[in-house]
Amino acid sequence: MTSRPFPLSGASRIQRLACGLLSAVMLVTAPPLHAQALRSPFAIPAAPKGQKKAGEGRDRCEAPPAPIRTLATTSMYDPSDPTHSKKDPKANARYQAAIQPVRDYAKDVTKFANNYVRSGAQKTAFAECTLDWLATWAQAGGLTDLRTPQAIFNMGQLVGGFAMAYLQVRDNPYLDPAKKQVVEQWMQNIALQMRDSVRADEVRGKNSSRANHRYWSGYGVGMVGVAVGNRNLLEWGLNSARIGLSEIQPDGTLPRELRRASRSRDYHIFSVAPLVMLAEVGLTNGVNLYAEQGGSLHRLVKRILDSNKDASYFERLTGYKQQPYPDSDDGIPSSRLGWLEPYAARFPSEESKAILRAKRPVSSTALGGNMTLLYTGKDD
Image 1 (cartoon, rainbow, N blue to C red):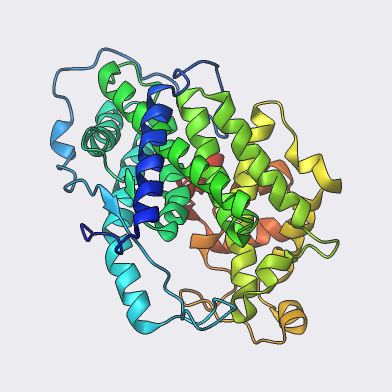
Image 2 (tube, rainbow, N blue to C red; image 1 turned 45 degrees about the vertical axis):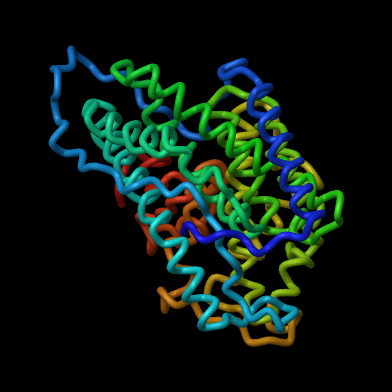
């Protein structure tokens, strides 16, 4: 996790120095926190009742792992494969070794936040654990040294998940305001770094600026915007979703994800999650992405639900047999259906009800943890 980047040419060193100076200016001139009141895409728990006792429940909160400041992940796929659908064993092993400690940390942060929601917002200790873990990494500059494009891609899910966890506990009145300020500034700084990196990719015309990576970056930036009250960040996230909505074809497919050959169906599912969540947070803040582009998001959802147990449509379009799900022998695994809870709550159908009934509880650390809990108030 602390390896140095690849050797830089003189020009590259100058570019990195310029980017560093730009980032410093960006952080100093970052918009003020809580400039505008923005609404969460789910109901935030009400304030706890009664007077909190000093130290109450603190024994439930173990110490967080040592903060990881540098993230330098690289692709898990065979670089000679233009479809980016064949994993290279050694590259995949390197990727998993680098990302797993961060994912474990994010999962535990989300677990504390979910436990707080599960308690009906009455067990402040869980809210404090959530904040303490986030503040520990924030104070150490965790995940602020992003050295590779893949690291930027990873941060959409990671910082989006942090923002969603934070939103679950943010309004507890017993939380330390100073720690909240540190966490919010940290998340905003990461979001600004991500946004500027994606903007640079747009200028270069990179595919990632219009494919699934863009939607996830938009989700991460947008959710941070909601968490810290920065409308500009939310709007950038919503505009990222609009790029995805404009890509959806009449049959509900995404051409850039069809290029993923045997993983095409999987990447459609990967793409729909941030798009639905951005549509949800947009709608709670007065922007109806569901209605844009002729309701294209509904077409994407339908195509995915139709492929739950039958991938033949994607196989006909791509000419490749689709990869089976490694963690499910009965359709889309529950870990990839977190987005369906808010979608089905807003647009109920017999099909979505049946899928969720068989898969609940559905959870995704990137989306806020136990989505069944967040959107139905139940664990199953």
